[in-house]
Amino acid sequence: MRMVDLIDKKRDGEALTKEEIRWVIDGYTNGTIPDYQMAALSMAIYFKDMNKEERAELTLAMAESGDMIDLSAIKGVKVDKHSTGGVGDKTTIALAPLVASVGVPVAKMSGRGLGHTGGTIDKLEAIPGFSVEMDTDTFLKQVNEQRLALAGQTGNLTPADKKLYSLRDVTGTVNSTPLIASSIMSKKIASGADAIVLDVKCGSGAFMKTLDHAVELAEAMVEIGSSVGRETMAVISDMSQPLGRAVGNALEVKEAFAVLKGEGPADVRELCLVLGSHMVYLAKRAESVQAARQLLEEAIQNGDALEKLKAFIASQGGDPSVVENPAQMPQASEQIAVSAQKAGYIKEIAADKIGTAAMQLGAGRATKEDQIDLAVGLVLEKKTGDYVEEGETLATLFANEQGIEEARKLVEQAYHIVDEKVEQPTLIYKEIYGQ
Image (cartoon, rainbow, N blue to C red):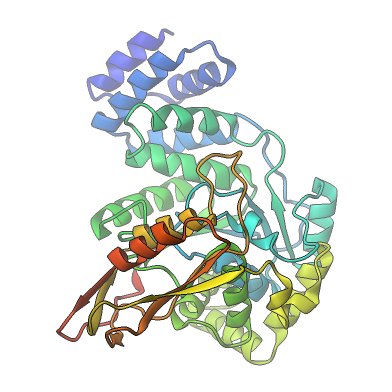
């Protein structure tokens, strides 16, 4: 086989065979295929797409390019959840204990975040003493005993994807549905889940800006999951404004705690219940999605979800008293109000600008080496559809000296205020199931 022949083949719109895809991924991973040829093939895929079989084979080849995590020692159906990411997305922190509290095993491995805030792992480290480092045996044992463990990714997981993602980032081939879908799904499959629930974000704060593009990506990922033997479904949710009110690591953890107390923002709670219902249903703990939701609502009402959260924190070295006293987490030295310049209704909150504001304050990292300030961020006092008086607070900045003026300007720019009444945005656009 020659790489140039495969580039020509895909350039001309032909499908690559299983053997050809495996040969490409093996060669690129071990360094025998150079970046410039992989870049050419990626661009050919960008323009000519891949069919269902090609996408599934590419996903499996990347998943099997490194370690494949074996979760068979965990009793029950293991269901993983993946979000395509957004501003204020603290869902996992509330969702994982909620689902575990009704007996579904949640074996979650997460990475650290690049962008406006840290990833789930970074956020959880705002809890005093909490550790995400554990070996595989401890991880499996904890899930069997507690029904929940959340650890940092270790070992050599999907090295082909890591290498290809870095290449796509500098060759204009990031925004390709087959390449995005296989990248996400390869990590989920390598992580060992039996079933997968996907939260595909749509809007200004998401990677997919339009509903059509979000649906296209969701359908591609669900099709891949089904093709490789994983029960897979996707929820398309709104990211035209930040999720919840808090953006920033410790602030988001506090908000997630509130959800399990039956409090917190309605949109975060609803999204956790929607995603959780599908996880519980796919895990065969309920006969319908509606019955699964009822189980989860009861777990919040009777305190089981909150108790599971405390046990989870304690099992990973954290201080569970932080749930009732979130002030034990890192606290910002300053709180600065950003005021409305005019009266009216909030028509839009540009989520990407809010995310950038949080990053200016130090809540995120631009490179893997950057240090995150876990205390800083912002809390939105007004959301889309709300009425605001001139001079009333739109958002509160939580800051430690860094980036205050830049963040203030970005928040002011993010809010679009109009005279006419505005409807609340739709939270859940669509649910997509595998065949």
